[in-house]
Image (tube, rainbow, N blue to C red; front, side):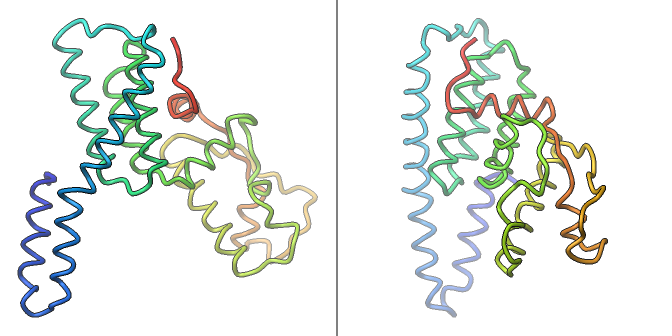
Length: 227
């Protein structure tokens, strides 16, 4: 479904219940403000950041040589802007800017399909997922037990929730081909709970970053990758 169609459905839905539920008038006003101002402000800020990044590496930019390349760039820009306008966090919008800038700098190094997939990937990952993936940038191979400081203090409900979030992110990263489990290192370990408890099943696992994960990290790094 196209974005315009979704917008019309939302407006129609709000109008259909506004008479019976006065509060929905506030929802309607908030949606109109979101459509007319907030999304545009996000896109404007994105282009300012994007242009600034490219300006710093102007000597590394390659000229668009033909209409086919121009179409590819337009497709990439369209996909990126669609994600940017919906993204609520400024920090993640800045990552989109860096990703797009790096895709432009490395124009000939990557196929357009790969670039579009990377934009979609960034759209689907949370900041927690990205921060967790970045922990693999130095070590390459990490053990779940070392992700956080959960096992050096009494286990609490908060520990349960936060460790669960890490497992959720690891599962997402593995499902998208960014990392892979390599081994379970449980020999000689003291089980704190029943051996088949979900915490024990996860804490001793090892994960390794995969080539696609390294590529993704390279393109969303702190600096533009100069070719």
